[in-house]
Amino acid sequence: MQHRRWTRATATMIASFSSIAMPHVSLLPSPSPIAFIGGGNMARSMIAGMIRQGAPSTSICVIEPIAALRDALIADFNIKAVTTATEAATDTSTWVLAVKPQVMPDVCATLPLPVQPNTPLVISIAAGITTCKLKHWLGDTCAIVRAMPNTPALLGAGVTGLFATSHTTATQRTLAEELFNSVGKTLWITEEALMDAVTAVSGSGPAYAFLLAEAMEAAAIMQGLSTANARTLVQQTLLGAARMMTELGETPAALRHRVTSPHGTTEAAIATFQENDFQALVAKAIDAATRRARALGKANDTEPT
Image (cartoon, rainbow, N blue to C red):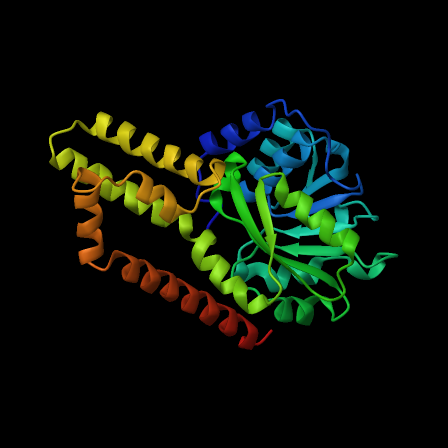
């Protein structure tokens, strides 16, 4: 996922979202210094979530080579933003690697981990980079959490799959979990190989919803509705359906059956989907994404460094 392909308007929205009053106190276990390497929108979202949950801005540092991004982070969050990892606090306990996979080897080489009195936690949100490769770059005893968030985290509505290496302590796992809880929900994966499926389902999943919305909107326009009305109908329908799935405690199948009357309009549409193997097509698409994620991971593991 390319988190930096968003506009300044998106960044402003994220900063504004961070100011929304929340009814709960900080869930973050400790104000120990946390450093983000990379100041793109996923890092911004996590920083906004941390501050929203009560983390002091003085405990957060971002290492970002682009001056405009550094300036925006300082202006929006009043945090420290620097150009190199060595400028971060010497007692930094957590490093969040929020950079593109292709620059990860160089980034790992810059981390001042040997000067730490205790093993710091390293969290990677780079797609396709396995903990095996990270251990190769950082050392076998490093505490590593591999994370796969998705873009709805920009609105605090994301979901993140997490996998931890054996050297990660319970306290560090809790810290990683709460960091990503600040931008949505989290779940732990016990087998790293399953992170490929997480990538296929939730990492790429928002695009599937956007594709469905795109198709529904085009179909609505074909039926004579204006573009504006079609978009409103589709957006609110998908939003409402998502809320029903998350808030009513029923399975998607149960909800579908509830709104499908015999011989009605919904049944006619569902029958058309099923006649064209809709579920099989979705399964095929997710399998393709899973296999692609697996191939990217293997390519990164075998690439010489």
